[in-house]
Length: 114
Image (cartoon, rainbow, N blue to C red; front, side, top):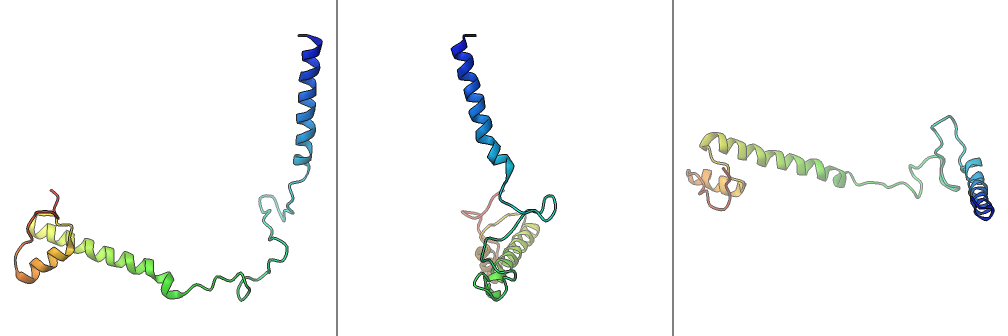
């Protein structure tokens, strides 16, 4: 290895070493215990409830997903019951309801899969 190449390699290693040293020295957190290093930003309140950071979710908005899942399960139960009764799978629940109101089985076109 030439002397010039060796000096360049040493300079690169030294630069990397000096550049990484400050990053290893302090990471900006005060850990209460190992693995528990979260701390709020300055000015963040100890108690969120009632502060400007409180999201104040509307209970009706929170229940929308539960209501949607309940409606989905009801539709799936109707599809399954129709399949057990007729041996035909009809995806469109409106067609199942219309057919049951008329007393007939829904036509297989467009909404069935075997």
